[in-house]
Amino acid sequence: MNKNQKGGIAATTMVFALCVSACSPETTEQGGATATPQAEEATAPAPARTVSPEGARVFFITPTDGDTVSNPIRIEFGLAGMEVAKAGEDRPDSGHHHLLVDTELPDLGAAIPADANHIHFGDGSTSTEITLEPGRHTLCLLLGDHLHVPHDPPIVSEPITITVE
Image (cartoon, helix red, strand yellow):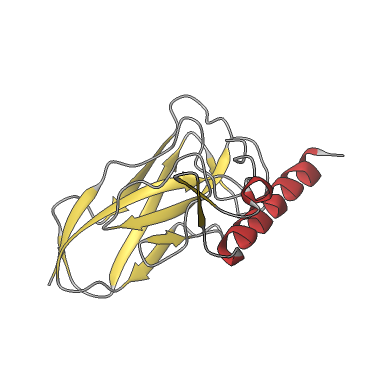
């Protein structure tokens, strides 16, 4: 079994475990502790984290911290010491961008969530345009590997704060 097949099996196992967990019957009380039926089957090992090269960094080219902007907001991502690769492409010293909007860093040992606060660029994009409500917003970039899992150590930008007019 090659490295890509193992990664695919791990990802499939993780997705299956999440589905089993989400679809399980409600938890029940047993001896004062809450237990979920099939809890053992629903527990999948965390995906292995890809090692990042020393000195790698991700950053915002535009906007910059403290900028006042208007919609649509043009955002350009920078990456040094690594290459951009699409999700699913398991290449050394590579990853793809995730834009975090008004949120904390996610669990660094798991796949980065995909929602309005965690925007994925698995297609290898290095820029985007987004629309945000008027007011102050905090943005951060987090690089993910081929399975959307942060590297070890994580490649994360300094957060920036922008004001949308």
